[in-house]
Image (tube, rainbow, N blue to C red; front, side, top):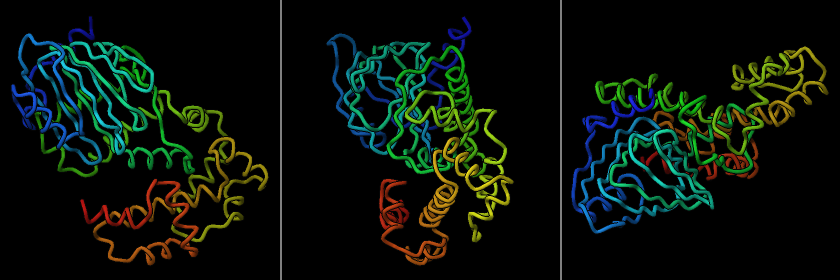
Length: 337
């Protein structure tokens, strides 16, 4: 009963109404507008009865966007692959059937979904279906995950498609997303506060990575478990606080208070990498932040050397493995954005 009452409150068209992007009864206009703003897709009617009564609202928020969408008709949606983002869908009303990489999920009031970026999605919405969708930048989520793990990932993050919205982390995600959407509706100036924006980004990422099953869930659980030894935490905290400095393995051993062999084994078990690779990952992240920061006026080479990387070939290889693009591509995205 609690879910039903909350759903009624959030299905009103007032949600994100100060960010209205489209209201239309023309199928082609709806498809073209949402394709341009959100993602490329094909859209078709599933029945001849009734008419399209679409409403789309979009609020960009840092590396996220919050999107309210209803079509007002029975439709089938075939989007392109989500190469650059993850899509978290919070059910508001109606039924949506999603098919993704051989898995089918019927999304109702109690079942949400998160679509990753590696497979092909097809979905069908009923005429009374409305969803609040959070578009999460893939690069941001992977950088955040890398920071939590303390090592580079060898493959993209792939989430379990369905999310139980009635309990555990699913219920928490649902309430948090709806709360932020309400705040944006009543106070659009929330987006003007950078620290708030970053905190919301990280909270959503942490909730998904900690509670929703995905490719690296086992490692995340190992990192977060209470039994993780304090010497690993001490050494990693030292890295986080001092990665700008010249750190040696001897420094980390001294901070940890254990032998090199014990420290190495602890990092491999709880972080999945060696201590020095965890340090390298933090510095690679720092290079990326500089490349994306308009206030940093320097060439790629200057930035790379500043962070202690002396072999450009090896650096480029490691950077591409971690972020999926070359540093020059990252720099171009700064100016393109």
